Length: 117
Image (tube, rainbow, N blue to C red; front, top):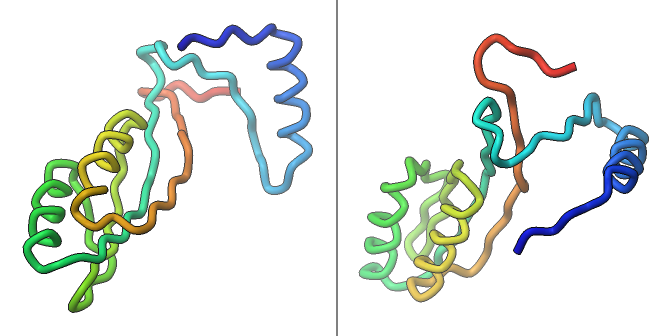
């Protein structure tokens, strides 16, 4: 679903975000701009049987994940990926014992040496 937001609303959002601490810069990056990199960080906790934990870890390897914590019955994994990839991973991990998710939301940066002002 494409949501069109008037430029005046975008400007008001930017002004409000600049008031927050510790926001240092606010930029209006377009999702389809090839010069912008978008990523999201997510932490997942899986609590399940050994068999399901092994399946879950195997799935997570495809996403260049890092295991941050591991116990006898659970593990916490960190994934940095595009939003749609994280959504797909949540869908895949849910039947394998996913009990908790924490996400940053999208972060972005320009490609190359260009710096946004």
